[in-house]
Length: 316
Figure 1 (cartoon, rainbow, N blue to C red):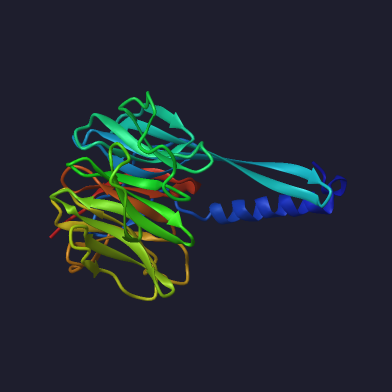
Figure 2: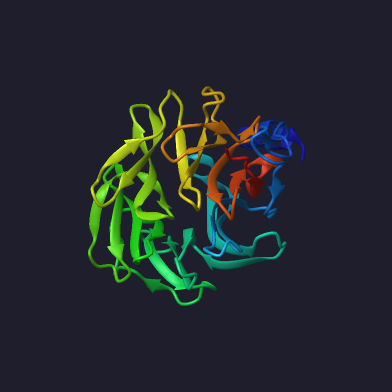
């Protein structure tokens, strides 16, 4: 393709793509880790962007989001425009095995039923995303509620007594809500996003909330509404996840270099003490999830694409 045969708009697109590829070429092929973790191992390697991993109750399988993004050029009366096309799907795979099993398209934010009997997720095909349940193979979509509870029902988690906690947009705020498995007893709990349950005490959750200019990690007792802010600083802290014994919390933060947008994984005790850094360097990590023992999964853009990686962290 010769540049002299292209329109100015097309030349701009080519230059933007070339510039973006140059930036991506600088990203390392493996996430950097500190002395607080073993060398990371790639768990997934598809061409799609993979994130939001969730480990099954028995510790043998992963659910995660896969996002395929494509671009198309459209010529309109206003000139050449670039359209972004996104296709979300939920994938299941056995940990440590290469085969993957795509379950549901037009769906995201999967979580496991506590007894491993099925999965719950956000079905984004309707006009507004809704919370849906299916069997373990993604077959038989059962709407939890007749319709969306808010503008964007996502991020469900399920307690051992079958209460569903999720977040949705109400106006400009993302709110934490709850309902039962039939969509009844709907309650708005408070502001926050990206929920994780304490496995040893399902009345305690961890979540993100913006305070001032920055996102911070909080815990809440949903029985009493008592909140505790665990992180501070002039940088974003987010994506908190309890370890299986409830003693530790993993989260993502850009505190290593607040001027950059790339985040790394950190681990602290459940009370916010004894903070240690797990990943480091030029890659971007998010969405930590605990497996069996000290095994920690996370999404990283190492080698230019967001995939799921795992490591064993060294806890005190």
